[in-house]
Every structure is written in structure tokens, then in C-alpha cells.
Image (cartoon, rainbow, N blue to C red; front, side, top):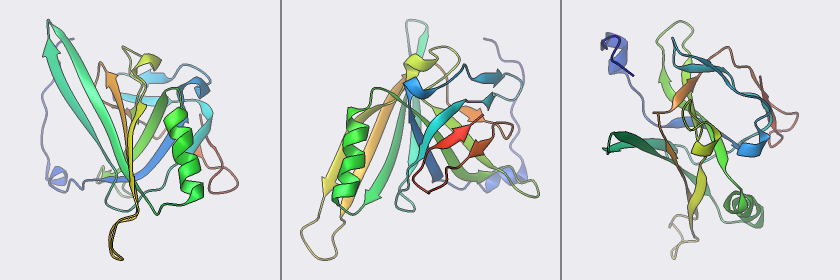
Length: 192
């Protein structure tokens, strides 16, 4: 790969809100076809599944990191998805057990940053899948640090971390990829 163009920071880029607005997770085996990639925009125009689940988290606690390192001419990007699930309950622990036992995950993450258009569109990124490693870049449940706290005003919940290794920085999910929610809030979403 060669450098093909420069990068300009425009006025809109100065408003670069951090954090994640939404997270959706799916097991890697539930990808129903090969995603369609648009190289010109570095986005997937299709990431097909019928089993994508929304995972809510405490506001201001969700984010991802993509840290690249290069050795022997090869670049590897370690991707971490972090979010905090409030309150320790049997229902929460059932979902956490399912995450811990999962066999590879893909995530779609929606950021608060937007494209400054009117109406503004937020950016979505796919974690755990890229154009080089494809499905073998999947995320794995690496930790779920749960605590009830000791005092009345202590935090009560679980900090979840999913980690994977990719060969590319996270690729966007374009607006051409249609995401449709299930009937109930906790039902599976469909992505075309």
C-alpha cells in the first residue's frame, strides 16, 4: 500500500466528540455473507447478519482503542472495545457468561463524532473484521471486572473488555448498510 493523498483538518474536525453512542455485537459465525467493501470511502456498504445484538452501557464508559505496532515489516493493530455494564444482577451475569463463552465476536460501534452535514450522520466502525485478516481478526472476551462496591455510593457493575488483532485500523460501516432493530429492544438486529 502506498500513500495516495494527504489529509486536511477542517473546522468541523475541531468538534471531535469522544466516546461511543451504541455498541452492537455478534458472534463471528453469524456473518451470513462476505461484507462488501468500498475502498474509495474505506467503508463496508454491507455487513450481512440477522443476529446482531445491541449492548447498552453506562453513558461515558464505552470506547475503543486501536494501537498499531510494526515489527519485521508487518503491522499488527491491537483493538480493544471497552464498556461498563451497570448493576450486578442475575440477568446481567447471564449475558456476561454468554460473552465469556463466545467463540469470536464482531462489533459495530457508533461514535458521537459526526460528519457535520445537515442532518449530521455519526460514524460507525466495524471491529474484529478487516480486509486482510477478514473473520480471523475477531474480538475475544478478555476481561469482565465485576464489583458490587463496598460502600453505598460505590460503583456497582462490570467493566467489560473485548480484544482482537487486526491488520488494518477499524473500517467504517457506511450508511448504505441498513441496520434494522428487532421487535423487542433485546431482540437481534438485521444488517444488510
